[in-house]
Length: 167
Ligand SMILES: CC(C)(COP(=O)(O)OP(=O)(O)OC[C@H]1O[C@@H](n2cnc3c(N)ncnc32)[C@H](O)[C@@H]1OP(=O)(O)O)[C@@H](O)C(=O)NCCC(=O)NCCS
Image (tube, rainbow, N blue to C red):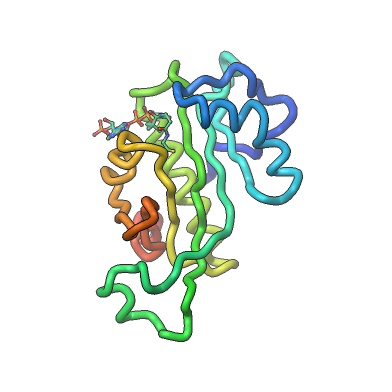
């Protein structure tokens, strides 16, 4: 299965992107290219080839979570020597308002999970972690099986679960 998204490039029409959340719009308009240059994140774009508009984007980075925040049933299966677990951060995911409610968010999430799973074959990653902006975003991730981590507001989906979607 090939990916639907491409790395953010200078030719993408970032300024026209509008998802309704200023923090996610502003990030793409003003910050994403800088963060990519500095190797802080990778930003993937879904483009509408007909209109040239950006339909949606997401970002991926390496991060980690403490073993202690993972639910007990998973901790029991993991060696205690790992005080932190390597994870993949799906830091941002947003769909332009012109494309919301048409399955594009689901498509982009699946694309991000598949990409994260492929990467985990060469760089170990226990889970994909998200940091939802608000209750609406949290509800979206809950629908796809993400589990809340205590205290941080973050959520995760185990790579073993993601693997079962693609193999
Ligand atoms: C949240 C967001 C990514 C969803 O994208 P979308 O393209 O509108 O969603 P889709 O059309 O792909 O919806 C897929 C499914 O998720 C459901 N869904 C969409 N948004 C949802 C939400 N906030 N809560 C619960 N379910 C949601 C849809 O009803 C649909 O369900 P179905 O397949 O059973 O019909 C998009 O609305 C968005 O970018 N919002 C602003 C930015 C944001 O909040 N991003 C969240 C990450 S920080």
